[in-house]
Length: 271
Image 1 (cartoon, rainbow, N blue to C red):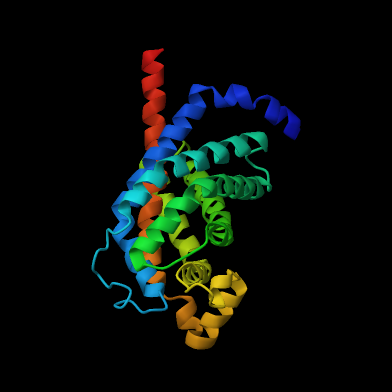
Image 2 (image 1 turned 135 degrees about the horizontal axis):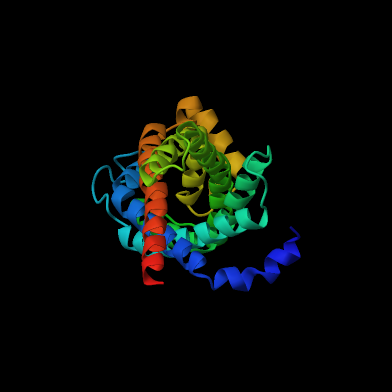
């Protein structure tokens, strides 16, 4: 399908009840996971802080910054899933095609770019509240893309693959709880392999203004961590990150499927 045809149909899709269901389901999922898992995210951020865990606040005020997360999470997740599903539709391929993972990668990347436009302002406020540091918005936008796109390139193709495999094994489409389990495995794996990028992003966000790290170069930040702390430094906070994102993947992707199914059922009953 030509991209022009996709754009020509955008108004139809955008005004449909299907698009609204995706937005609502994504928003509910995003708000739920952010509010439930916020303490783990705060602990992870403080573990990765160059100040050290206890100097960065330790276990004190682990809900600091939660208002900004709650405000940003609903539209952020809604924008991601609307974009993700729309790009998947534009890049339609046969379910048996070897291009399926590529389609999911492209859709997830597009979703992250759109969602990042909403995520960055709330991320700045949240990080500053968690560890009290300074950052620049454009720098944070690029740093989040450096981390989130690689993460989504792993998580979403793996999630879709695990769902397809489970559906094939049981000969029917997965239930919401099964989608949640697939989301947990996909999220945990993606969290582990992208931890160094998360460490670099956090160091850049929390760097003092004028320092070399505050320049925003991810490779430079990674090199600095490697030289000062080695492999352990690159994977600092990996277990809280895996625990948080595995649980987050279970809640986020399970809630998305469940909410979408409920809204679909309500729509059918109301028609």
